[in-house]
Length: 264
Image (cartoon, rainbow, N blue to C red):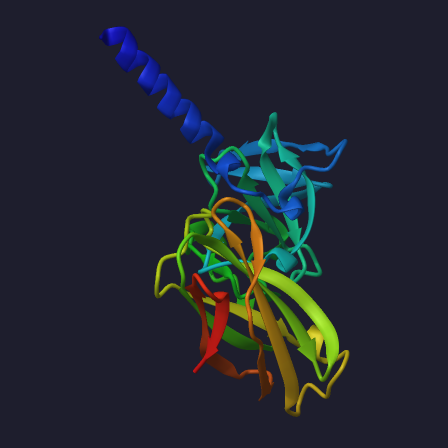
């Protein structure tokens, strides 16, 4: 009987380690071939662990506020120390690389964390809105600002067995960008879960005056728990402005219709 219990415990532990292998991973999080290792150093003065990227020191700053879209990831640049599962990413909304995102790929610590460059202490820097400061003392009064304006659309999940809602956005009839929203731990969305995605100012300026209304057309698809991607029937078209917010979209499911969009 003890042997059976031992086998069960080993199996459960192995499943926990594999974690997200049950789900389809987005290639944006993959480690590129030949990716370098970046040094981890312990700072005795601050008691913190730092990551050294191209001679620049980064210290732990904060965690994820709500969610991050795949199109916010610029590149996977390598991994920390000897652990290829502890991967480092640069961010599209951070053109000066003042932050790096650290995310584990082995299913144990899926929620990403954010490290901030030590040379930005006490400076007012551009910070993506999805980074949540944890208020560590070492950062003192380091300032933040969110320079880029955005228009935000909320989507409510009213269907089962979905782990991600993907979107495609047209602005004034021109294709602008694609992305996806989901829980940070890739868990199945619950009925009533609200997810939001941003249309950034840089996307708008290509096709419209950022200080005037522009026409947004949104189509959706979903990624199911089994990894299958399915289009959502219907579309959302509306005039918006930067700084605006719409919570009008719902994704529903019916056996006859499949996944379909409801605009309230």
